[in-house]
Length: 201
Length: 218
Image (cartoon, rainbow over all chains, first blue to last red; front, side):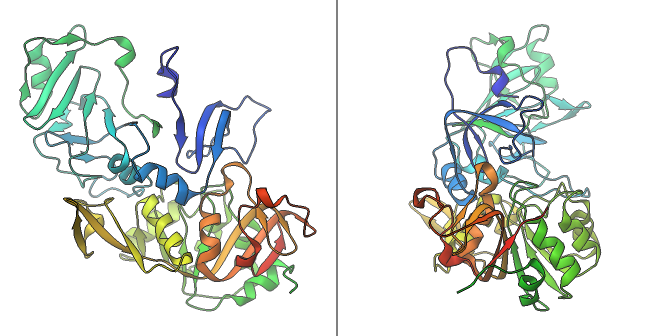
């Protein structure tokens, strides 16, 4: 999904955690190749210059600091940059997969999610769900705002059209730091929640 | 040494209580012929399965698990196999989860003769419970130990009679990492060719790691 929003003229290399650098669009119907799939099990294509590696090498790339940016969804994020996105206590646990490795290893971690969960705060002073990693989130992009995690707390960078600062603060379970100038979100920065694990390396 | 055998013969090496390393990522590179042989031609019980994900509702691992012969699982993601999730709830402690890169590296370390490694992944989460934590250059790391198997079940696209394997596209994943990490390594290949027919530049897994070679059917 992130791949669909990369602006024209910007070249990125997308990684699939099971061992592809340089993934392309989904395979056309009738042209599927069972050996070229993404981490969701869907048949995809690869771009010129793509590389296939094994899982140890794929995670050497991820853990080793060779991924520039990861964009992923979250259940909760807090003002210290702690991220919870792999389990809800009391519910069936799907496992963390590659999420822990990814957010620890990527140079920049962007969370893209809906601002609240049915009115409940997802951006908090402190996460209550089990963490995926501590102190890793750099930026939170929601349907309401763009917020940066800074050593002083959550800095409100941009607000989506139709919302006021008060609306965003009310929907946020931690105090927002207000800079002198707050931008208006551009639509190509606005992602909906529930993104797949796709990242730019 | 003749490595070509039948799946039925190869799985006879599996004993009660063995740890099986099973390659594949969901369907990609999953050794379906060998898992079916474990189900149908082996009676080994109390098995530990090490797998990235224990497959899906459509792959053979779930059928083997239905027999109750798999009593322990080590994995990173189990969301596609409903039985593994159920096992985790019904028998606490029977399913151990690791971050995917940690699982891959534990296997790699075993095959490379290392006792373990320090990783920053899992620090500050439930993954660090009970593990040695150490600081290097101001950053915290967890000690993760190597993970070896008694038997590895792996799929290749093409293998020669010596066991040299070519794994195509995204099917290398865990199989290629597991091959050096078990005492008895069985490969099912979609195509088996004579020695010399695979370009040495294109060998994913050297045949020295492979003990038995089976024609893949599924």
